[in-house]
Length: 434
Ligand SMILES: [Zn+2]
Image (cartoon, rainbow, N blue to C red; front, side, top):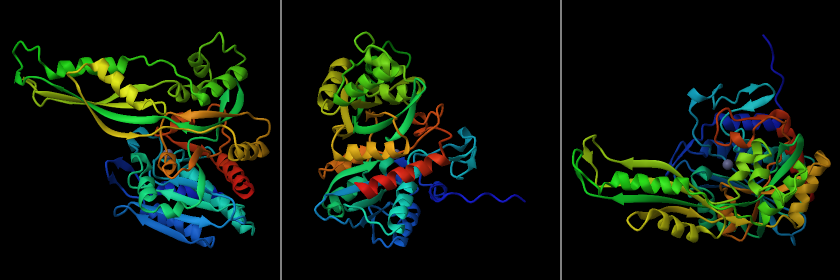
């Protein structure tokens, strides 16, 4: 019998979290987050913190605790993670997605990347600070939210609207999808997330004449919908650089050694390798058809047909893009907005940004830190409704060749064990010094 070496605490906590199957299927259907929230809450209570549990619906538990800072004149910092994950089909994985398998020096499982890794790093960073008898300068609001993967309706949005006092005095936040390293031109760089695109989820509805499938029928809802979907899906939206992406493209051009006057922003971004596909979506609006619904029998022409389109725009461009989509599909197609959420863009400067860059530099010196915009969304959108400026900073030093951005919601999610220790140390530095 072989004995396994004992796991470092961050990996052990993340492993335990992965073993709680917190799959979130959307539209209120979920396995629930109570077990994960109570586990994280108990670890915070072990540090002497007082926890508040909020259930938006049965089983949909979020947990919040406040660490007192030494300087009450400083605004509080929210440090947050979500405990739900997107579902995983075990048939597509090479390990059990909810097994918390340790293999090849990595922790595997749904949530290893998004974002049970960061949940664990937050806890062990706090253990390092509070366990050594130190105290952060400012109050830290530690929050583990439910339901992030379905837009946060039963998590962050519920807490922000129903329990805003939990975030009293907070002006800034850090969380997921940023702070990790990528390898560009054989050089490591960190991507710090300073903003998020807006999202607009619409339904297109085509109407026509119900009829026998053998008739000559020009008023066919399926044909009309197909034409509309093709136009929206094929639309080449123009590149539109914001402050963040302009800065990013300039820095990437410098690292790649190309002249940004002669090479397009998209070529520069795609030349960065595995990070390119992730960043490409932030240069322009995207309008992707994702679901079709029409008809019920092979020889019956239905009277209506529907398509769902996932639209991601730059902050503030939502209404213009909806109007342009309406123009593209024509007046016969009805557009219903099913769900929308704002975009965010924060400056890549200021004391918090400097503190994040400094903390990274202490543990990985002389490696560039670049701002980037996220094509998806996080709970920072909900916190922004309280005037809280949120950044993506879950620091991980990753090996070249590991396509980390590609593993968000992907198969075989995995994170190197030493990257979790790196994140724990960088976060402990940041949270104790800022
Ligand atoms: Zn996430």
